[in-house]
Image (cartoon, rainbow, N blue to C red; front, side):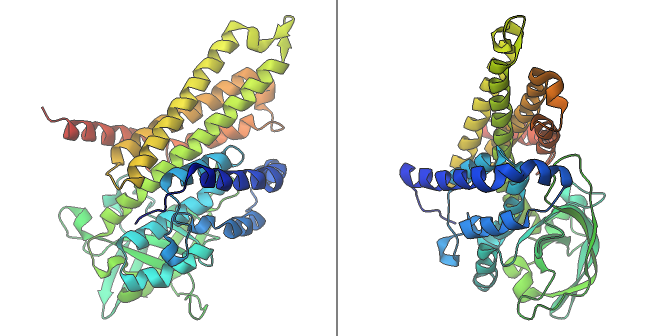
Length: 395
């Protein structure tokens, strides 16, 4: 996949438009919608109009074809106000990336225009009740029957699972493969037939999962019971055994997104703490003039900038077509930890007000930990980084 090169003025025009939308149509409603855990239907329609569901899809298929760098900046910008919104199109674009990068030409032409407009929105369905970071441990199975596959299994913690219309579904087509990754395949699994609108029998949305943070976006269980798909349209690439590598490829973009979200959270925490520290007074002066608070602000600012630069570095590697599992892992690991640290320090700067639902700090504090878990835990990121450090620097 290639992305058009936007000059700085074009990129800034995109960011300015998104920024105006965030200020006018998102910011006034976030507090109530997040606390009530309301799905943002109207905002999703506005994101459709902006083309965000086709942000990284090639113009050939109707998308904007944005670089990962520009996309990363958009995600950060939106996340400074409401991180949940970015999850709605991030999961979707990971699904789309898998089709564009690995699908047959007929699959690309069939699915990608529908993904671009948001007519079909979706997600990446990897996680299972007993398999998360260890993808090779999944048990959802697709059995070949004639020209079709029959799928049985359960996925969980799937973003867009309720409101979305399709998922990129990782399954096992050969349970005896050694190693197990060679027996894994990827399907585009819709809830409804795009041609007729008829429900696909055997695809059931389970319960909505309640979460500490990341409100608004739906996270759900998905249950497949004798769910039947044809190979030509739905088996990505038309070949079995490639699903693990497709999932890993999708996670590179996903980790850049999580890093970008983390930068947005860290930036907002820093901004709120900086403003409050200059208006709150104790012992006759603003608390920003107390050394204890100044030290916190200095550390927060440094963490935020370092996280931003690591994220842009990972995006630049992705745009150049280079392998970037190490760079994306570094960005995701460091930025998410920076988001957690900044959210906690911002709460301490605010004191009791930081614990109040009337201020955004408690929301940032609840949102940030997910960044350390999503798209691969930070423990796994450090292992990936270490393995690549050794592989790239043999003794």
